[in-house]
Amino acid sequence: VSIGRSWRGLGNQNILFGNESDGIQFGVPIKGTGLTASGFWMASTWTGNKESIYGVGAWGPVGHRAGINVAFAKSNQSKDDVYSSGQINGYKIATDASGISTLTPVYAENDQKIGRDYGFVLSGYVDVAKDLRFLADYVKTNADFQNNSIGLRLNYRNTDLQKPGSYSLYTRYIRYGANGTIAGDDEWGSTPFATDGGVFGVKYVPCKNVEWETLYSHQTRNYDQSSEWTRNLLRSQVDFHF
Image 1: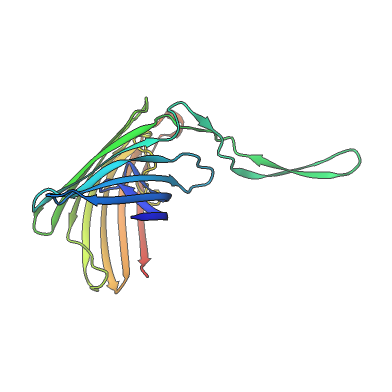
Image 2: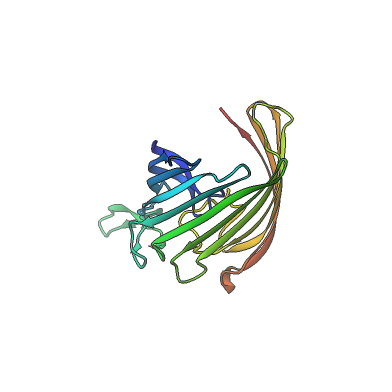
């Protein structure tokens, strides 16, 4: 059982949901299988969020070389609901005739339209050879526009934070709909929604509890004419684990 504030994800690649959230998530082993049934209620912690989700899922091995991770999530908001985030962008000063000044907040014009009220993820992996794992995620919501996402990934080996010198190589294909998520993980902007493209990366452990990752990605965004772009992204980061 996980209660309180924690980073949580749904599916192997966290496309449907992958965020810091407040809530509860629990798992119960399914007798006679290697699977675990899950229930959850959670709300992302980003500024102004007023949406929470609840649902069920299951994960675990389905044989010696394969596994699944599936979930269905329902929003507490209706599909066409609109709410204000309440985010303050700044303040303005107004002075009246008597010289008295008042400070008034300026709120962002960013009302949040839900656009969908449920979604599901079908996710799985298969070990195609020694040290070689293939993962696939399919996500769909009930939005009216760009309502599905696909993530394919191939991993070679795994890093071990306790073994300096261990490494992992991976390649990915992504096709993320603008509304093909509830609150999916965009991995610090390297896999944003409404894009498609490829990612190539390497992870390396130079010393215990330190992981160095470098990735290259080529992506195209075809959302609408005002926000279309093609980009090449090169990023390197070091994560310290305590």
